[in-house]
Image (cartoon, rainbow, N blue to C red; front, side, top):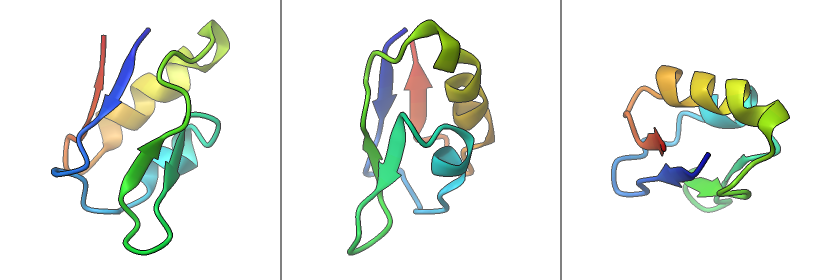
Length: 63
């Protein structure tokens, strides 16, 4: 799995961090998403897919 977050689309809602805190974080100054692990281990794949599905800005993609 490869994770990408489009910081231009991100609205800073933080739902990704709540779903997969080992994979996503937010910038201090504006809450924009940061990918901590672009190739997370298999045990985190379900949480990452959930984060992508619930992102209100559709800023997270998984391949």
